[in-house]
Image (cartoon, rainbow, N blue to C red; front, side):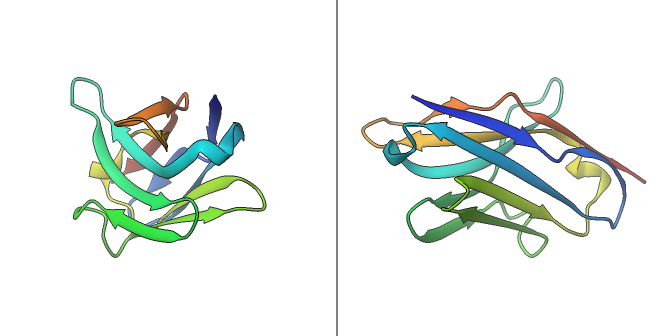
Amino acid sequence: QVQLVESGGGLVQAGGSLRLSCVASGRIISTYRMAWFRQNSGVEREFVASIIRSGGGTIYNDSVKGRFTISYDNAKNTVYLQMNSLKPEDTAIYYCAAYEMGTADYGVWGQGTQVTVSS
């Protein structure tokens, strides 16, 4: 099993930047793709970005293209989400997720980290 721990959330003004980190531990070799999702209270969880752990292959939600960048550091077993030009509508709890080989969906989730963007 894989465990995920996020960090890096906080309060930032509109136009500012934050970098989220998600450290993976456990049976990392089984992980095919890593992703970030976000959720506001009362709203369905939304896909933000994903990356193939072994070699790039990124996908982004249209709402964050050009502003957010997802990356993976194999030496540190860490996936990052660099968020620039933040907007108030980016405010949410951000979750890291792992898609393990042999499964049908993202089955491993972190505890989440709060991002708040003030106007």
